[in-house]
Length: 388
Image (cartoon, rainbow, N blue to C red):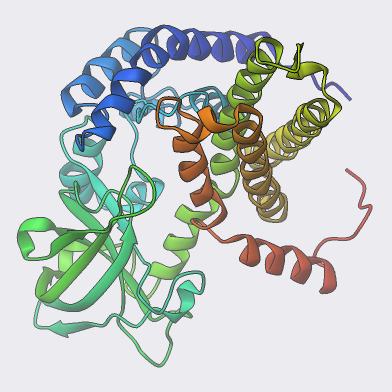
């Protein structure tokens, strides 16, 4: 059994780390200042400039198929890249990508929606969550009623990532109430100019999702994504990937935070000695290092399983659960080690504290992951001590 990365993986890891160190980390103080003063941390134009720089070194469309101009690096590379990108809170992502379910569109839909998203000309959002249907996505109720060659949508979607900026939404609505999630949910491509509006949701973080409001929004038949009634399957396909990508990013943040704590502990003195010599501090550092290492291998195994065509759902749930809890434990310890300075907005620790709290909620709460893991074990879908 070989746990080492390939030469190509190491090269990609190093290249992304160099990009983060050179291009993103130097922007952190500016981002913090902008956010303190109520402005976006980084301008959209600056993001595009950085994305073009990254494109010049080959980082464009990380998981986008080559036929669409992407690199198609696969789940393992994507997880490694997410770990490196997590080492900064600067709100940046590599360009050239699109939500995976957009590839399910017709050629006409790909031309109108997929390609513009890949090229950065349009922005999309994924709209399934409702006020009474969060973790239980099967409980969505928003109806879509057929009227001639159109579908009429009424209702609300909430906590929609990117909903305030999106040019169009992938909206999941009930087209057959009797069947519900078992063949009665359809996905629609709904342009903003068809009539829906977004409302900003203020959160404890520096980023806010949206409520999307639909009042008699008419969507033409040709804007059905996939098949009528098969939308729930598409939605689960999109959600599944995030189960190991979210903790991958959290690992990068935890590693950076732990390094900050180590450096601070060596220089901060109390009662004539660096706090690094205090057993209480040493134990917090040791526990954090162990938990980060464990999370890293759980995440990488989930990505490896996905890359090799295996069913990675159980492993991904474990990765999401452990990685999210780990990151929140680590940032709490790091803030404690920094004392009062950690609590201020002069350092990025309190920002990470707020930001990482979300990892335990979105794309499946801790409780949902525990439910999934326990169900798989109790029903025998996965066995304890199963051969690797």
